Length: 366
Image (cartoon, rainbow, N blue to C red; front, side):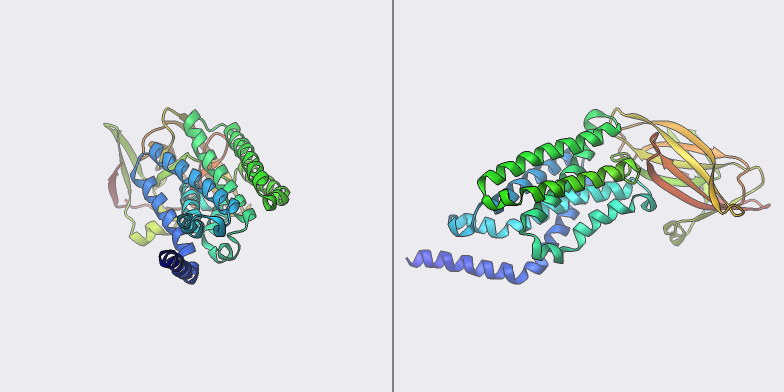
């Protein structure tokens, strides 16, 4: 009897500790999940990363089912601990799954183009005070889980098929919807309160599916997992032994951080736009450099040159390519780096000033 009392007392102490620090533990586990995911993306092979993300995805689904199907009062003592800490497990796995989307959406495109989807992911990760109050509600768990599933499948399918076809995004949404309809149906058969909310779940899933497809076919979502690893502007470019020898103006650390590089060009001088782009193995795709000039009289951006080159995927540091232009007008310029569908991977902003004297350059090898 005393042993049973000690076990119950220990559980109650752990529970009081958890409830006392829940406000800190919930966001902390989400952030830890994100950091773990970030480190795996930057340090190990992408296939291994996807395998880990699939494991996180399975754990999240199993934990959501567990926390909604069972009452802690009816569970064996050891499983009560698991039920108590289940929200932290869900937060950790959601942090990893949301982190993968945020990393690719952030790195794969210009912020000015993809900010809506970045904002959605960031809000889900940051506003944990809302999750703290509502996290045990199945509608919140299922909605976030569906969003992470859709995002994960839209990352993985281009790797499996070595293609950026828009039909793969549609397929990701279709597979996610079928899986979740089955998942919700199984939960609803087991628990009456899930059955009563089944319609709300399906409406939430349909709304997320609709918004994500709107973002994608409006070219708001970048063509992940195609990502812009590096971009720069140079006065001269030569290729030797597979290496790019780039001659560019020296920049301070501050100038590198702040967008809007200033190039000083002599009349008739060429300038080069260099990019390194990561793509899945065995995939070949065309990249466009859309050179746009801001016309101060018309007060609008005008495409002056749309130049293209083909890249082959698989190189972690990115496959290199460039475009160039001559007799560039002085003033404001920007170069959109796009795929063939017109989805934006990144944007280079700069200003051209005409000079007569030689500009001091430094060489960079890529």
